[in-house]
Length: 601
Image (cartoon, rainbow, N blue to C red; front, side):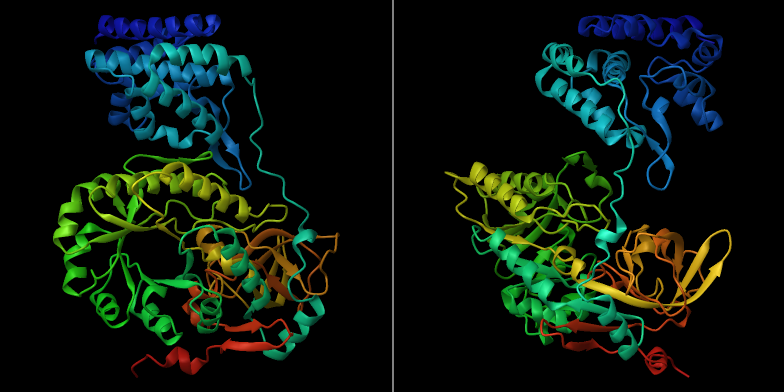
């Protein structure tokens, strides 16, 4: 037992926090901070596991798998984020909720004091921020609270303790919020999203003619989005959107996109060959493989394309296949946390890309391999609606490009994709013109007057281009009434995997019953023998009966392409609706012979 040592440590910590609290005006919190540590429950554990360099709670946790002292402590001290963990969200899961401002501030002061105690003479003002970034518990922190904490600890790291405490006292606590709600955004009226690009009666007639399930794409919508995209980025030098083939690898859609100025992103031999047959060539194809097979690299030798390295370890393999010709792209990611809006992305867990520091160090090696000009790519988020994402990513790439351009030519900057679409009723679509304008502002701020003159700008938007302009059409086959009502349909997760794989939301409308107000909850399920084969759960829909035709919205990207044949489910056909009302077959439905064609009997 080390009662005296532990007592001195917790008292030292308390006095430090008390001093900080007094300096910002939180007198009562300073006096009451961590008083539970002097209770028998916590004091006994602290004395038993005391080392002076590590939390006794962490050591008790290593021995027991949990900490009795921490369980006692966290429920009595509101400055810990764990005090604010409860059920919430749309699916009622365990999550962190917002902390009132005064407790959020106390948390920051507690982190500063803890780092001072445990780091001793080695303490720096950056330690509390580093602790936050690397700690597992912060992942449960509510994003609004975390953004506030990050702001304070970043200021501490950059401007020091005196200015940070002054900012807390004069700004943060002067605009304090006692408690604010943590409710999900209310759903919009589902009836508002029901209308499709084809009327209910037309959809039913088409379902009778073609048979269900099938995918239907709207040519008019895809073309209009393509034109909006070109207009929004018309200010940029050599702008082009490279459509990721994985989103919709359908020849008819790819040809349509090429007609309207899109390039493509390929990652495999099959995608390269598909795009070659669709007429894409040379600078219209980005070859960006992730952990490629040899056949992928061999096909890239045959199909003229613009190569992109996702890992510096691929350099020799690309070189052996003659792929380091012309401008070579590099997919890169920040060394530290990437933040935009209330979102934080940790590059450490991403399998994509090279860290910025590794790329800087590798420039001599890249030049030795014959690379004379580069393009910079980055992808840090998917399906985001945050207006801050593109400008933040652009700023990161522009700063890096400026630094690298001292040693190697930078031809283009590729801010990739990631921009989301409005899947849910009432959700606002990303303002594309505003996003492009924000990117332009970053280009002007960072590059005007610099040595990096007018680099090209590329995007890789897939979901944004085709997602809203495709529906999966299916028919109700059976209604089962139990405690929940199940509507069985002839489509399944084999046709649209996203709801099963990600819990993704896709709006569902009933042909001929659009905008009906009287609704009841249904689980819309498929015939795959898995309980997760659900296209929607507790979805409010008009009264359903066998034979009703449903349209599953926003399925124009990552829909048919993610399908599979598990359970003998055959892949559905794909069709394109032309502006004149004609429907063109793009892919026929699979047959049992297709299913058996690769078998060896």
